[in-house]
Length: 73
Length: 140
Image (cartoon, rainbow over all chains, first blue to last red; front, top):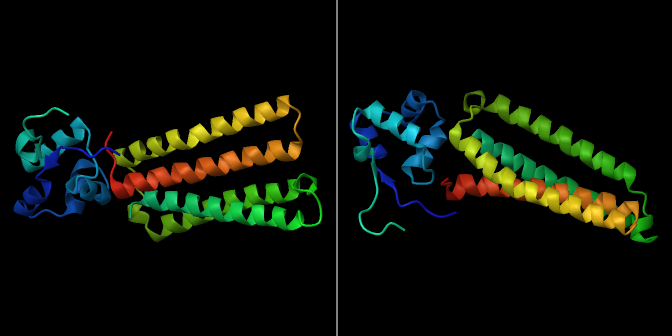
């Protein structure tokens, strides 16, 4: 399985908001294991789920997910 | 562990164990006669029945043990599709092999056992792919 180059700041945003993985999971309608997998970079959420996560924290998408500059491969 | 990952483990373990017991029983019976002369129909039906019942019972047990965790989401569905795609390729291979064996008039013993082996490989590799998707990560 090809690893993703997308990284995210969900863990930091969650800590800042004093929110547990289970709470975030409930807010976006997924299991806690899926939130854990996204935080660890083991699962790339759909664009819709990505927007839902950003909305929960009240920040733009770029503050939640990052993609490295430069090479496109 | 995700509920669907537990289900994948159940399918993997049940498929491997039941097939191993079935194959061992055939080989033991083949000590006294040629392999394709061993009466296999009863054992094969029992093996399929035990697989189905054991999978259902274990899935119910896991579901009862973790009622809150029995929700599935988008990631579970994507990983399940990935596993199904890999598993189904072996059903196709088994079907083609069985067709060729029938065309060349090989014994029913071989046709039935190739199909059962293909089903088992499909279940094992499909489950293994799902488990890898959960463990190593899955990116659509």
